[in-house]
Image (cartoon, rainbow, N blue to C red; front, side, top):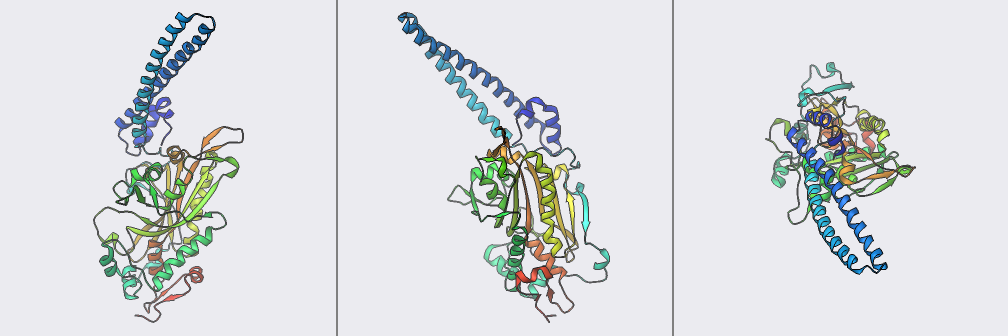
Length: 428
């Protein structure tokens, strides 16, 4: 959540920044009014507590001085003050609950230098690597689902029979390719990140505190008989590990990676943009998460972008870095760079990693702090990004590796992990 002090100390500036994300100004005013009410009520509770304590302390003195009648009057006054204090404390708790409810609905503030805009059409391409349009001219490129069905490594019909639309059965050499991608990504990052195998389900509090229940409230999968949710990304479990903890400054930054299966409803009409592995309800991903000091977060963000790009470079896939505009930012992020791979089979750039700087937004919601060497407590800054999301990378590898004889040649860097160099040699 955002720092509620901003609502009191710089309301106009905070409202203006949130408006860049499309937040209703009335919701921001409601949060400000509740924050002001809370501040006044805290002052009232503190004053009432002091007054009651002063009267209670006077009772002992009166008793020692044998002034029983005055002591009894003081006891009566203290009881009245205690009842009044309980009323004010109850009012404060109600206001704090209402304030948290509203503030939890406010997204993170966008960074000041994030480009303005309202949709993905306003996003800005910052850099492109390895893309040469001439390479794709004069050739009939095929989409990965056609290649996959022909080589018997992708079975859409059986996936639909098992689970419905937007699920996949990947088999044979295709399964080895997918497994190889995740193994390669984990190996690439093993020296810089601690590998974690977390649960794939989390409690409501965990997914809420990371900001994902708000973002995915119509897309997350909930277990019917339990207060548990299937994770939409490994980030939820990795961030949830430290909720309510105080870390040591000397232990920062903390860098984690996790290979998980992720679930999202991906609401929307089916169409050509959801065919094959372009958009799935269930998918495999290696996630990267960092916790660091606030003063280090910008540098850690740039290094995380580079880490997310490494597998794409090793695979020889053309990719570009796109900065999301303010209106297209995710709920928790202050800055997002998407890494997109070119898919010649559909002639589109497909997002394969979304690298987010979350600042202290998730750590405030989850109470994840660190103690500086001088003893002061501060909130950690959080960052996350896909080290490798398999579906679209799998698709790009297959499409780019297609040979004239119908086979698919895998990138050299992937061969040791997949255990094969070619899929379907000799198939037309």
